Each structure stands twice: as structure tokens, then as C-alpha cells.
Image (cartoon, rainbow, N blue to C red; front, top):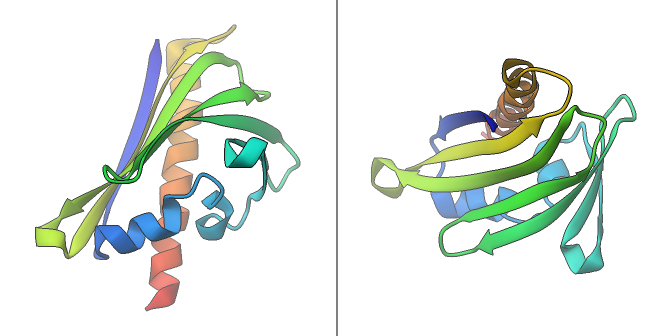
Length: 139
């Protein structure tokens, strides 16, 4: 299995960060380049990137108290299978700040572990950059 992970520290309390990113359907609220639609009572999301690439993802686990959720990819053009990713918010700085972690495991299909890991590393890094920019605009 290949892996990728990214994290960022934000000077915003974790409950506030989780309020923004904790909904499975909230990804486009903090990453406005994505278009998102929910199905199956909010358990399946369809994402469309600015260049028209479609991803279909299913919520696999949700932990409100632990401020995390995990999801799998049902459909994507990327050369992978068995994708499972987790987005988590942890308290830092005595509750004054948050560490947001985004990580995943997946099996490559027709490419190397390094190639598919690099693709998802870019996804996670780009998403967390959008999150930082969102909170920067609020100041």
C-alpha cells in the first residue's frame, strides 16, 4: 500500500476549524475550487474539479467527538484502488490552535507507489493550503 499525508497548524480553536471542515459535504466551503453534491443522505459526495474531473467518494466513518472522518473513493480517473483517507482536527496550544491532518492509504494501479503517493500528496497539500487561505481571509 502507498501512503500520503499532510498537516498544517492553524491559530484557530479546533472546534471552530471542525465546524467548518467537519461535514462530509463541506469540502467546497473551504476549498471553493471544487463543486460538490451529496447523495445517499450525505454519505456519498460527487466532486468536480475546475478542469471537470469527477470523483465519487463514500463516507466510511465519522467521529464528531474525535473531530475526524474517513472516506473511500468509489470513482476517479486516478490510477489507484482501495483508497481510504482520514481528515482530522486536533487541539494544540492549549486549545488556541488546531493541527489539521489529512492522510490516506491506497494501492497503485499501473504506476509506482511513489507516483500515486505524489498525486495524493499534491491533493492534500493543495487542500490544506486552501484551508489556510480561508482562515486568512476571515482575519
